[in-house]
Length: 293
Image 1 (cartoon, helix red, strand yellow):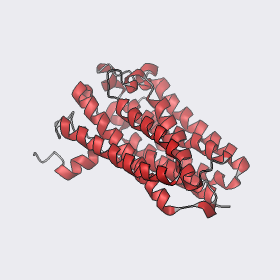
Image 2 (cartoon, helix red, strand yellow; image 1 turned 180 degrees about the horizontal axis):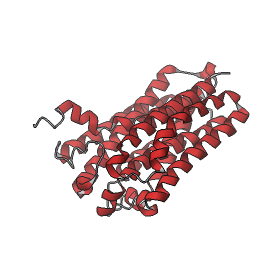
Image 3 (spheres, rainbow, N blue to C red; image 1 turned 90 degrees about the horizontal axis):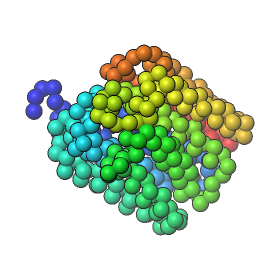
Image 4 (cartoon, rainbow, N blue to C red; image 1 turned 180 degrees about the vertical axis):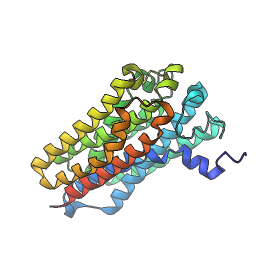
């Protein structure tokens, strides 16, 4: 190992891409606190967070494995790529992905036993979606469908599911809350894909950012944030305290400026971290607003 290479433990943590973790934790927090306070069960909230985080990390490892063996990561910048950079054997990364999905599945089954076995179906769908993002014969991430699936699974499913496991009830406000949560997760993916346009185009990975081009992809990022803010305004009409989440959009100023600039590649590296921080800030404030009755 050279001085420039991360240690064994560090490389696996970096390969799990911590900057994307808010996409899994925010929907759990928002979904849980959107339900009636008297129905809140902390153990189920923790279990839902474990499921969501294990799914997120498993998906990241699965993407690392699939992109690595396809050679897609050879020309990309950004987070550590375990397979693409030769930091770990492909089989080891694949096993790590499977192990994370297994943890999510086992904890998820426990939640199902307490609530409804119908939750097994979206759980299986989430695992399949996580693997097929860049895996399988026709990965949907290469077809420009990544944003749609992220919105559905890290927005709608994760938010509503986190609330449902509390008291088997889905209030109307919970459906509304899943929209900004999903759009913020979508913006996180767009920050990643915007940075990788040049490398993805070279590797024939036709993400939505590649299909739209640099300028329009930047506008898509901005529109995602704008619609998320508008959704929170609608929520505030029903539950006024939700409006405090709008303060969190101050944190989107810098990444939005980068998105709408002419910066490319490495110059966009700060965008993913800043977007994740903004997502966490907005998500925490929205959850707090929902918790105030």
